[in-house]
Image (cartoon, rainbow, N blue to C red):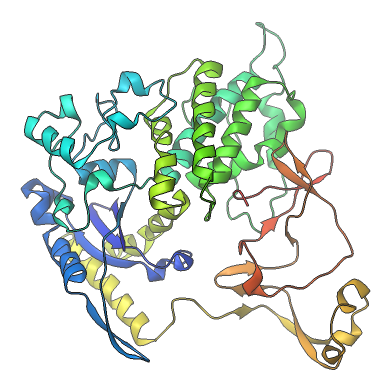
Length: 485
């Protein structure tokens, strides 16, 4: 069992994690604790006390679950604490400022070294022993440890062994911004005063963005860039918009940039990182190759941009270890949990009373949860069909689809649907599956339409999320992967 820490609407909450396949819905996130952040001034032990006592009971005593084979006792072990960097540093008792000398919760590397670090130093990692020693020193400026983590009282948990990161804040709201700003500055800046842009102008990029055809799988649309974009430190986009912009950037403007450009190579290296960190499943050997990839990326960033590495770049050097200890980092992202904010803030805004607002939110949430339990809805929803019509297989004209089928099928009918939602993922015409044709310069797959048809059982699909087709300026069709296959 994992626990997620988040800060929202004037109160803090901890949430228990659940089956990965259910992350698409916020209805199945279990609210574990709501409290006013002002209570933490009395100590985290008091603020988190009710939750810690329940977690201890679940681990030591367990619960009885009725099964077809009779009652079984199930025990729950708290394995990971999830959250953004500030939240984890706060709950973990570490320095809450990333300009502090020792801001990292994984190691004791000073920020002057971390500013250029490309490889993890195993000797500087935090351990239970040096964590206790740093507590005894009682000087956050010298150690980076501010106070003891209240969750260390759990039998199976210690904050120094909490190998979890949040790719949403590290990449979507951090590294992607830093890299894209440098790439845009380089590509749009004139080589000499009064000259034309090096490769393209923001006006040309905006023109292509304005008429860019988004696919049915693109839930967000990135905004146009202002003339002040290159003067800022971050793009004026949300985390989800930034990720989509990074993925489509190659298709949008890659034809204007030479293959040998160093800044473009930095962008492509970022795409390689994203392919791995966004993947929900990885092979055992990929942590070693990812370590090399991180070293190349951090080194390339400092050499190409002449910039120092921010704290989120430093987190990257610990990602290979986290892949080994906790598995794919995409599964520990807080993005799924932050969607829960809306269901918690709506009752807070709806009431006119500001007294005991935490209780108002908690009662409202628990009533909703009670309704879900009473309705006996299963965690994984049923398949939903769009507008349908009945057709007979014998009426199909395409031989590529019909010929492989057994003869007994031709007398049967089937449903032809405009769309199907299976396990909360919607499938409809215009979505694609990838076979071959990778373009390294654009970091996308070129595809073509075909008359060949096939059929596959939903249970046999390796990656359930469908993909969209996007068009380049020369009308070629490309598909951008969400992550590595």
